[in-house]
Length: 333
Image (cartoon, rainbow, N blue to C red; front, top):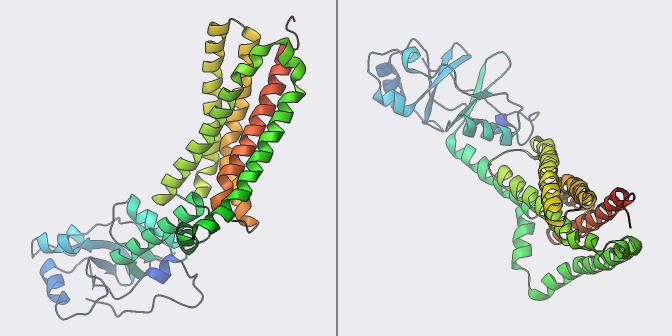
């Protein structure tokens, strides 16, 4: 009934592949075996995991049966009648994070590794899946929440003395001061427009705030998604499209409110269009900047927030004044 265990890992396999996590030392039964026979076969056997029995037709994987299902089934039932004939399975070369997410999505505690021909190669037991989930969670939170390469760096940043914290943070805040000076210069470029219509200045804080808020929301959503196994590449375009949708919604609402409150359709149109562009690019900036800093060997744990804020604020101000200038160009002075 049981097949001899065969090695499941070879030197040609990727280090973090599904196959590297799998073990062949698990109980194996045939779909034609009875439940009683399967129970008896477990006695005196040494296995890496007893949570699931692998059901094989020769070497071909046909299903699994949990130990709970085995113990609760009638003794004279056939394994093929009580097994799960369509359990989740993964290819041997698939990344361990994808394999773990596959198990979570199907609410399975273990995962079979099967080759293209349907041959059973091994089972990833529950404790190894849990270890992968915890490891990937730490890596994702460190990379996206702290934007670091490892949890060791994250721990070091949290435990370093005051003078080191000061040394790491102040240079980035100086960038913020430089950004504030540049923002003042940008506003001064539009002095003529402000002199013609002081009301234009009323909406600068709102445009800047909303763009920053959209960027912050993007960072939060990405961190939460990564913590449950969703890879970043699956979220990039969704977040970009979400930023566009939010920009449209905020623009329409602002256009209506400004038109109603200040009775100036041109100004309302300028504010709405500016908010659309500012919010639309905020998501892209929030995802792209930390990645760029990390690729250049800088520690974005300290720089991503201040630098992202400066860039988003400057872009928002430039966009707002340019749009308002174009829209108000035909307005009577």
